[in-house]
Image 1 (cartoon, rainbow, N blue to C red):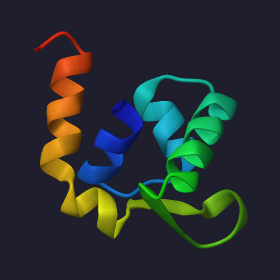
Image 2 (cartoon, rainbow, N blue to C red; image 1 turned 90 degrees about the vertical axis):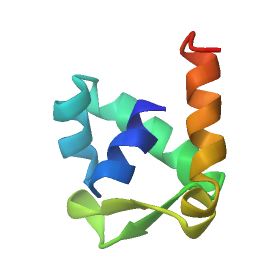
Image 3 (tube, rainbow, N blue to C red; image 1 turned 45 degrees about the vertical axis):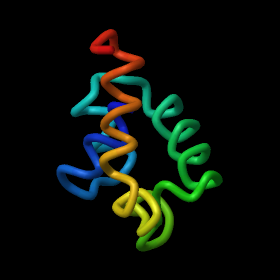
Image 4 (cartoon, rainbow, N blue to C red; image 1 turned 180 degrees about the horizontal axis):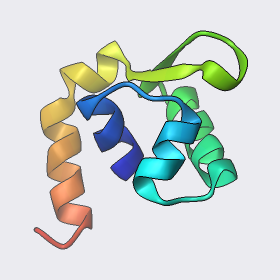
Length: 76
């Protein structure tokens, strides 16, 4: 959820996300692929500089995403 939450705040590339979240670059790439496959992020650009944005589906369901985040992070 932290990756998607960060992208909602500001579109970023994988390197920027890895620095911000203090996670391994490959881990970030793996999770971005999953988010993309499930239609939650879109990509602009090519190669290393690709920037990730929330998809229209993610924006439309932001309230539900935030509710799930609260539930799974112990706020339920």
